[in-house]
Amino acid sequence: QALYEVVMAANGVAEASCSLVVLRVLEVVLGFSLTLVDLVLCLVYYPWLCARRSLLSLQRQRLGEHNIKTVVVVGGNFGGLAAVHEMAFDASVRVILIDKREYFEYTPGVLRLFCDASLFRSMAGLIPKGTHEFVLGMATSISSDHVVVASTSSGQSRRINFDYLILATGADYRQPITPGPSDITLASRGETWQREAARVRAAGSVLILGGGAVGTELAAEIVCHFPRKRVVIVDAASSLVPLFPRESSKHVQRWFEERGVELLMDQKLDRWDDRSCTIKDGNVIEADIVFVCFGMRCNSQSVGAGDMSGSLGPRQEIKVNEYLQVEVRPRVFAVGDVMAHPSKEIKQAYYAEMNGAAAGHNVLRHIKGKPLLKYPDDIAGASVMPLVYVVSLGRYDGSLGFNKIVVNGTLPAIVKWFIEWTKVRQMEGRPIGALVWALGDAFTFFLSRNFVKPLAKGTD
Image (cartoon, rainbow, N blue to C red):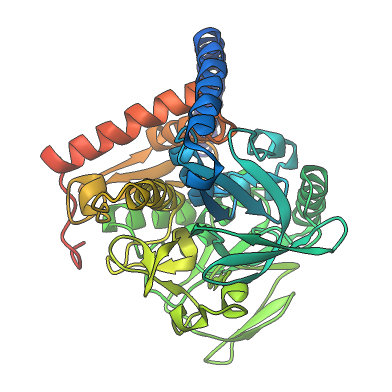
């Protein structure tokens, strides 16, 4: 019997190893194929882009400088870049993008960098060039008609006046998930991830506080890369990823249990430090390294320093209306994690991008005197945005959700790889990314409106 169990275990390991090889080969083949398609598209896209920019320059000359509105976008990640792309070829606007870092980062994928920092350059890139002007600096004060920006190199401040403003400053999670003050350049950010990966590698035990999407995915990466480490997850909720449907939560919880991860659910924290946490009942859990994966702080300090501080809510979020306009400021818009919208949608990169595109579109419509688009009704064609998510459990497992449909297992991991690969290319301005996501977003809304409709709020 013992021999039989050993043989069966060996067969299971062999089958798992074979599956991993197949999946890795699939990734390589898909990556090569997509790169080839991108190169072919470039032969058409870049000549068109040059012609379009030349035409834009002529259109602006005909309009005259006095007829061109200045639009400032603060924040150069998902929401901000989406807004910039939306306005890129409209001659009626001059777009200025402000960010305190020279790069963008694919935030949904960075948790893997805690274990493999070599992947950093596949998840980040320099802020793309385009028809906009890029200002590298910290927005220290934002008012209803201007932004004060401190240069990250010299520290000197300058005032930038605007006709329209889009705030896409996001929210800070704990470092290093959110870049620190010194992570200004792509090189310095890469070095930060190298240090963090070394810390995780050296730790014998890891304590993760928070069982939402961030804590779950980080724990899964550590378990997959270092299966012998002791990993403990503590959360006050009764289940992992509680914001997602029950089928996803069950799969995630079962995945961790099968790998010996200690799940301490329904446990409220009293206090914590870098090496331990104390539960309300007095129980102390120690570890070599502690990650706090809950709570976020809206990046609205610069708004509080200007004349729009009255637009901030109790969590320092920027309150907006159904058109994404800041209250009583029709020419100021806010998108993504920094704002609070009446729909109360969950905060994800996907929704930040939809916010950014809608805000950019509404700026152009406001300039032309057209009715503004109501969010999300006029974007999604429904009163609720589609619920779209992928919770990754390491590189080759996960849970994918689209409204009422939940798929668990290997397919979600492949889908997340595809999303990451194409999304980074889109943020870089590559044609393959623009094409995939133009088609993907349209198809998502079509399915959500007609076939797989969103769940009503409050249902599971």
